[in-house]
Image (cartoon, rainbow, N blue to C red):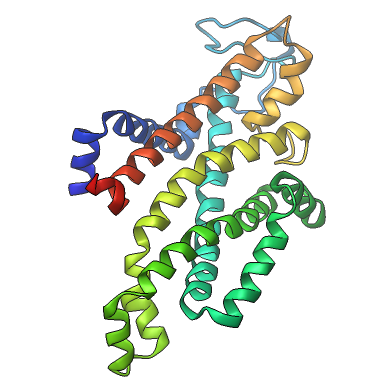
Length: 278
């Protein structure tokens, strides 16, 4: 693919980020094979052991292998990051395209609703939604997807407003094309690039928010491991005595956020027409 070639040649750091993302996705998908132990397999005789050949990242207070828990934690972060971002992109694209294309009263009403939603801190809205829906992976995905749909709709609406003024849109309308046909055949294909860029940059943010709500105790309930939950539970309690309990989940979270950020920046530079021309 041309995009992959341009990514490797023109944006090598972004390509490195893409490789890391693919590696994290592979680890998440094949966690059962990558992890040497089950994430909840305990052995009190091996409690709080430092990193060694038997336990690469050490063990926690229950003797559970930290490396295995970090690997299984990738399932949570990657699943939430990818699925919640996809949900937010679909909702945000539908809201932004319809609002920007039709304009007038519909656009005014939708944008005021978006303003009202954005008036509240995003993390607070996520926690409110989780309290209403209850704990669980599905609730986390839906809460994060809904909370990020409105900010993304603003970006997609802006791109739609630009596309709507092009001459071929007027020509399609004059030719008798319905609004649905214009949206599907002309508007959506021309806002795909902003949608991809928006999605790639929001994945890292969603992963960070998931880690934050897990750290606060509103994420996926234990014993299922998540990187934010590992930092909160045993990481804080044994930070001095067993620092590896905080170091390795923190490094995994940092690596994931870094990879998605540099990949998103590279895709933005390659897909944005203004930056590409520059």
